[in-house]
Image (cartoon, rainbow, N blue to C red; front, side, top):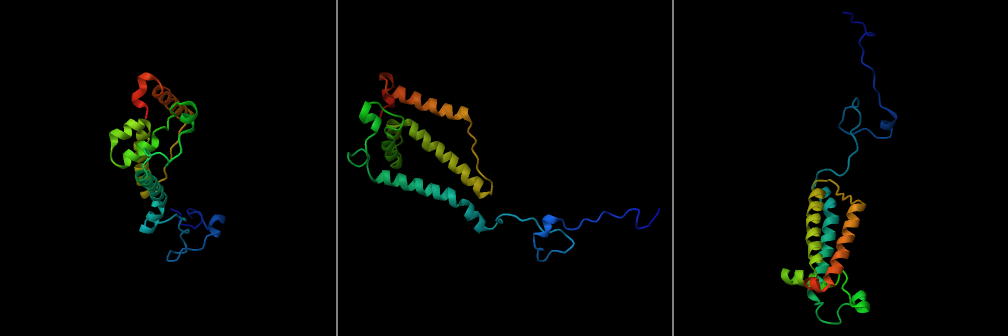
Amino acid sequence: MDASPTSAAPPSHGPGPADAARPPTPGRPPFLPPAPASGPGPGPGARLRRLAVPVGVMAAVVGAFGYVGAVDPNEPGHYPACPLLRLTGLYCPGCGGLRSAHAFAHGDIAAALGSNALAVAGYVLFAVLWVAWTARAARGRPMSIAAGPAVWWGIGAVLIVFSVVRNLPFGAALAP
């Protein structure tokens, strides 16, 4: 075997132009490239920062439900009337939503469903998505919900069908 320095010398990889902008990492040997820059570490402070937005959203929702739970929408004068109901006499998909939230806040699920069943389904969907969001945020993973046009058209169709059915005689059980 030839042991000359020209035969099997490994290629020299010095610091590149991207590494020149980063200062050397303390405690790291100078012949190793600098450690990659990373986001917040796994410490408790980073986890609290990641959970700040989901917790803030839940605080706002709890505050809104607390207000509606304290100020009864069944008593006239506390909230404005639905403009569609006032002008046409027809129930929109949101009619009865405040009464539903009031009953839900007091634990009366049957009354909440009777006031606006679609709103109760929305509360449950929000709870499921919030738990998933919070769990992903705690692990440092982003939450992404990609809803394509078909999903939005489907949601619109459900709202329209719900509105039409609750205004027909056979759908009186869905009316608030």
